Length: 443
Image (cartoon, rainbow, N blue to C red; front, side, top):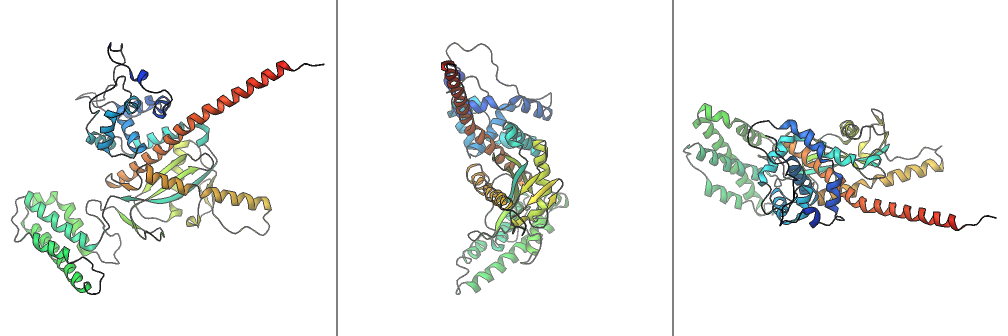
């Protein structure tokens, strides 16, 4: 059932309202007055039924998602800080200061599942619309990055060890008696993996890895024999993953790098300090001059950068309402000059007949293109794009769009004082001009 917002009736006699408590010049006060909360209420209301226990208010849950990304906090920490911070409570629509948690941290998990990718896209669209004409520039910057998943660096040894642990856990849950649990044996074999690249330890480590693989396969086959057909059907997807891990080799395609995140794939971006990254490829579309992110798409497969352009430009067109005329990319997008009605500009040697003006214009374009690189760095360091803790490919997409929305909201909060300053300067100049005209005497 849809939750009700807090009542704004006559104020309590001995309580001070948050409107009187907080500073009107604070960034969260201004952001709360800028966001059209009614759009979220109208858009998400169809996701609730008319019966059952009332849920938390939509504004509260959306504001917690925004604060989580803006402040780079976990679900648990953002709920804890909400109780301590009056500006968090003001942003979420509270009238008086609250002393209790607004919800359980797991409610944010359920709300993200409720709204899905479409809900995250709606939050991103609202963050874009608040920038008005600045988000409707004809030229955009496009680049890709990797959104790493919250998994350990994958090795065959680690995967075999996890299969053993999972099989023992399944046997304990289903009350299946195993011939051997290999608890102490697996521990000793993992200790033998230390310093495996040292010449003296290499042979011993490889033998231990082969033994772990043998034990993992033995437990998988034993559980397949001993589990009843109905019970085994419930664990069939997990056993399918175990078999794929045990059968894959160094040159296999579509390898599995994590048991709990099997959709993760390996991406090489040519970084010297980090040769391989494990997660999902993300495409970012940003306006050329104003720097507003108008597109953020996560891809479930590792595809060529040039093949990400159609979907990325299509999403930006849906969010902004107009298609970009020019997309400025790096040399990783070679191969396409046009995508739909958008011209793709890539750094290349100028034509012999190119004028000095054309050369200068191209140079400025590609120097500006480099401006998307620090924006991606800020998304990773400040807005939770460095490591994604949300599960599945849907979690990749939701986290990416919420990070882009948080970047736009932060940009808006920084822009509001500057806009007020510009208005003040314009009014002051106008007043001086009027005063000057009054003092002028005409012959």
